[in-house]
Image (cartoon, rainbow over all chains, first blue to last red; front, side, top):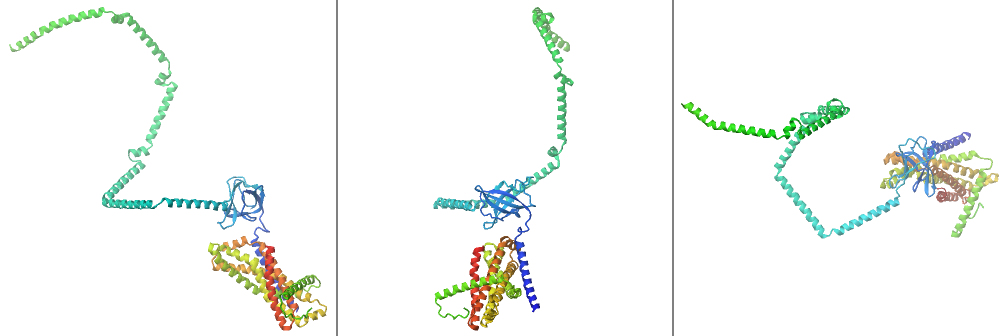
Length: 334
Length: 260
């Protein structure tokens, strides 16, 4: 009797134990953030429309759950949402929060897109960058409008395309067909030419290719021009030399420099020019030999007389010349 | 009071009067049971014996019922959800249905069929063989010795049976859904965890405890007030099962609308 009672109680005890174990197991599997919830901190965000969000709606970062909605309340006429974020998750100040949904039928959730700021939101912080969810009613309304417009446009198009236009379209398609047939024939007839042209082009291209290769590798004048640096270096040196020269000129060094910078030459030149002026002035007035030469006519007259005399003498000589020539000729024969 | 003449003319008025009278008697018996439960001496060994009978011995049939209910739920909901690509929700559907509704109700119905009928038959036989009268003569309260252990045992064991039924039901759904129908295992389990709340389980267990009281009380009442010999025992057994089952389903609706 006593043994039987213990057995009965034992059976009942085992069964109740099993029941309690199952209950605990299920409770802990379901209530992940229930009794043993991780220490977290709270953030807030203000939405114009928080439709579809509930307490305990997950908050995700990159699709991974980072916390839950703790409270939804009204702030003025906007929705103030308090989030509990896991302590190990740090959210930059310039992060963005948006309402997302898993497909059209899926549940809504909050998605935080982390920013790049070094500062991190602390307990009680507020996420400023809020992206409102598209309202499905509005969305459907706009889609409806768009569909209506599309339908109207199609209707109008249908009206425009009458039998006549249809015939035209058919005709133009036929023309196009014909043209393409002609083109085909053309190609067929000139097959040899075309292939020749193509092969020529091919050759030219390969030649060009070689040339470009040569230029690239620095062969030939163009290649050297492109690849060789000596020209460039020479030009640079020349420029450098010019630079130094101009610098020296600037400083008044050397002949050219003195020419540019030294005023003595200028002064001397000025004095010389003044002397020359004096001289020419003297000549003008008939002073000195040169002046007289220039101004006195007697020399000219005498010279003329002398010239006339010379002329006369020369004429005398001229008259005598034929006799002399004859004498010479006679002398030769006789 | 105990040896009433059977009423032979079943007019609707008499039927309603009888039903109301029965309801009142059950209410009175409930109060008597509650009163006797908290009154010394506590007969714990009787309670444990009934717990073994109602709980432990019913566990096999409850497990079988639970597993196959979960399996068929997975199969049926899979064909529904597949039409719009929501196969992942099969697990959540099975878990929610089992914990909120089918676990408590089916467990209570199974226990009614197995233990409730036995209670009515046992007490009815004791009534017609005048053993209950003998207890009264010996100045022992028959409610204290016969009804209280059964009601208390049912009150405690039904939630235990229900949680086992819930669990094996979800496992049955998992076997069919993941192993046979090839639903994504991760989606299956995460959707269960996501959609199933602790309240779903706890309210189901509260419902199960209420069903335990209802079925044991109705069965005991039917057995306790049996009359008419062996035929009466058979009739009261049938009535016990029918009335308990109907009461369970009606109270299920009331409790659900109150709790969820």
